[in-house]
Length: 247
Length: 56
Image 1 (cartoon, rainbow over the protein chains, first blue to last red):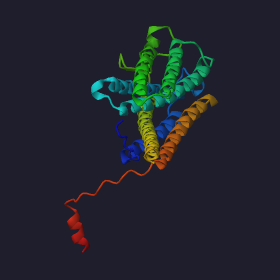
Image 2: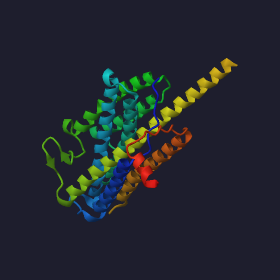
Image 3: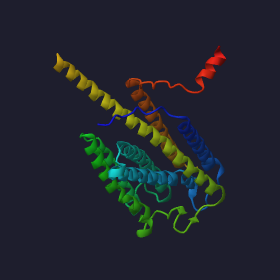
Image 4: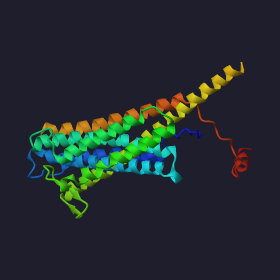
């Protein structure tokens, strides 16, 4: 078993990312709720959820993408290191938080525009499935076993769970959906909002991505500290057994 | 504005803030439980003699 180093406390770079994320989100909320105009085809200002709902969904994709990349790096023999397994777990947990929030904010938006909290629309259903898949992945990570076995099976489960991500992303194009097409259409490079609304949305994307980075760094450090703690406990127990045997 | 919008913002930002605080708290608690990391032995740098000279 390799020696796990105690990770250093948060450095200035992480603090700067945290401060930028906090400031960016505060500015997004202020611009989104009080400055940007209301869209004519949305009653009662419900379009203002635009500034948090798509950025939350975007971070969900980023988080699961990072978890998958880390899982692949763990499974690849040349790059296999426990750090990639810990990073995959950290990113997936943050992803689950963002998926939950995407579902909740989407549900609120659905209530105000469609009149229902939930409908078995392809996008909503596949996103809910994604949420459950990654909850299962996190549960699997807690199933006892030796470090390598847990890491390997988690990495494989992470790759299987990721199969749902492209289905979620393309579901609005593949099937008839109540949900509108993406506000930022990457394929045709078309933006469905303009002016202050577009800038506020862009700020939301950047701020929530920074918040994701900050959260992942802290969750990853926590995972490393816990691994170190477990190793310390094991070493203490072994030392005690050796001392007993010598007596 | 309907109350739904504000509720959406409160739920999203409140959850993220709670999660962030819980991570920092758990990280600090885990750090306190661990014994302090061994301090690396100090190497003699080229600046050290100069610093001593200034002190004397």
